[in-house]
Image 1 (spheres, rainbow, N blue to C red):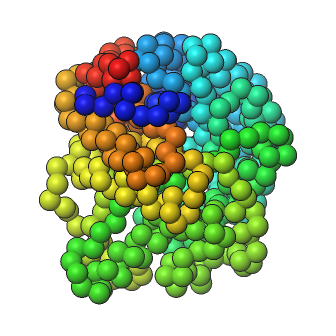
Image 2 (cartoon, rainbow, N blue to C red):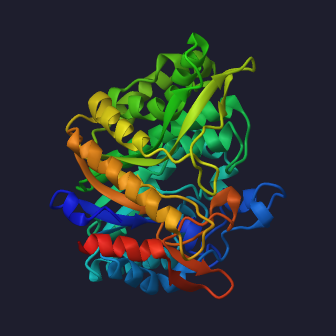
Length: 435
């Protein structure tokens, strides 16, 4: 790797990330069913009918995984808590084993000299709440606030940072409009309501944690650099709309207490009554903003119903997911977010990585990470207050609708034996972090 730790400011945080349902093994420890279990049990939704029942068995093997993280020289571990593990019914009596697990996990992270960075929700909605409408039901903001208080009451004294929801666009649009993630809906009204309610839940969680005296609270949004397929006014308008509902919708709400006008043109008829009154909660002050970045999208208009556009394949090299490798998009997005939304607030690259089918000698992943770290350094050179970078992911894991086919990990997991084997990218990063 060209990259070395010395290329970044003193105190810059380097970490790796994971999520609960993708690695823990949801059948262990008394966790309740989730809407991802339901989604995966429906034929055709997940490759090979895979699910998160066993995953990487991190529930039992977390000491080994944290040892790998520490041995590589990382500073921090970004993990998520499972709502259904802590509250099997989403509400009511907690599962003591679930709370004990996150207590032990947080202690184990600290014992290895790592900083625990927590995301409260990474998509595993309890099935009992899905039965009540899930993210379409405004009451979910209060249910999530109660879950937040319970978890942070147990581990909040030891965490370095907290974000309520990972990638609200995926929670709402990908799962409720495109139907590619749980709950698998293709319903514009459901999507509009989920988009609004996930933001209300974010704001309520921030309120609860502030009242508990917690600090270093942020948000994590996924972003794609959007470019028009050509110079026509139609392509530019289509790209601006895609950028509006993918990138700007959640940032505008959290930092400017509004929704983009071009997105409202399509979504407003489907938003819940009184949506305009929610911004005092949604725009609760934050201490940092996390950006998950993987690729760009090239947008072309079409004559279909709103939003009336589609993505086209670009000319650049792609990952095993078919995503174009476009590092410049990371530096451009970071600069834009700082200029238009967050100002002097610290930004963190909370996820960046690639799916690769190269196996142990994952040279492509080394090049990908090196190029994106260079883009992060370029953003710093442009004056962006970038404070950290987290690789996605530490382990190969359950990659949602792709099942176990897509491998994002620095560490290979042999799912039949659960053996962990660090890849070339793990060793390259460890060397770079030592330099």
